[in-house]
Amino acid sequence: MTPFALFAPVLGPALDRARRRRATLAVVVTIGRAILCVLIARHLKSLLLYPEAFGMLVLMKSFSVTKSALVPAVVSERSELVRANSRLTLAGVIGGAAAGFLAVGVLKLGGPRWVLFCGAIVYLAAARLTMLVPRAKAAPLGDVAGSSGAIHVGGIRLAAFAMAVLRGGVGFLVFLLAFALKRQNEPAWFYGAVVGASSAGGFIGAVVAPRVRKILREEALLVSALALPAAAALVCARSQGRPAALIVAFMLGLGASAGRAGFDSLVQRDAPDTAWGRAFARYEAYFQLAWVIGAFLPVLHSISTGFGLVLLALGLVLGGFIYLGGLAADTLTHAKT
Image 1 (cartoon, rainbow, N blue to C red):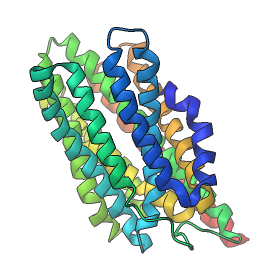
Image 2 (cartoon, rainbow, N blue to C red):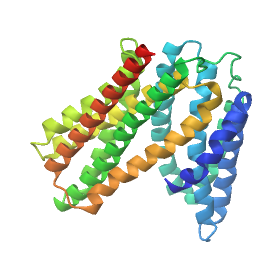
Image 3 (tube, rainbow, N blue to C red):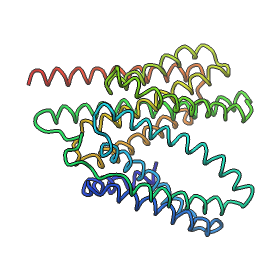
Image 4 (tube, one colour):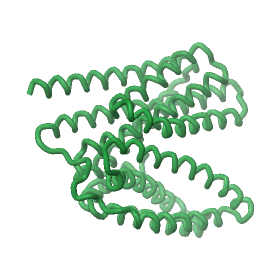
């Protein structure tokens, strides 16, 4: 989380100052990644590898934030925001998986430098495609005005808390299962299966989120994203076998993916256009910090799988209740004023 946390205070305001040129910033960031790929390929056995890899991490997260701020420019209705964000998630999952398999082949045939050279070509192609993204509309979807602005800000902060609980839960489960599987002498392939189950859950979450949005608002989508993995963790806490680990990993991956689509859409819906960059940069840094804190707990103290799943379920349920209570309090305050 360190690379992005250091640059988030700079990236957010830069995105907001260049509201009509966010696509240009995305192009610059993508070209920067291509250049770094070439530099890393030349410095694989040099100390320069480390600052260059650091820069790659910064640009990776910077592109993610810029992409989220660009979505409303290509969406005509607020109800389509979840679908657009979910499609981006699906594209990332499918593209990442396909590129991973291709990279393995290139690595075996030509070595690590050729993997990086191919990556540079892909980034240049992505930069060309990014140039085709239209500019932001004159009346963005996220504009808010009047007294409702304070309510929207409160709702976004509450949604960010709910999303941070989800991300913290993901970090917690990753290290909980890592140490538990090691203690149980499970083979490495099974941990790979757990990671695969989580990725599959993320894929399904991205597919399901737009369909759920047709029935529920973004707030209800976030609550469901907390409730479903909490129920799965509580049920599976009684069984510490392989199926339990796979089920919880799948459900938490699903909840985190669907919840993120709902959160991004909520920010794009309620935050003013002038604050999209700062909001996404700030909250992405918070979410990474939440992941690290969640992951640190099983490292700090050995936790059994069953007890850990109970803690995970309680944390998600508590996060959901706090989110619902905050929404109710905001609504009541708004009604009084």
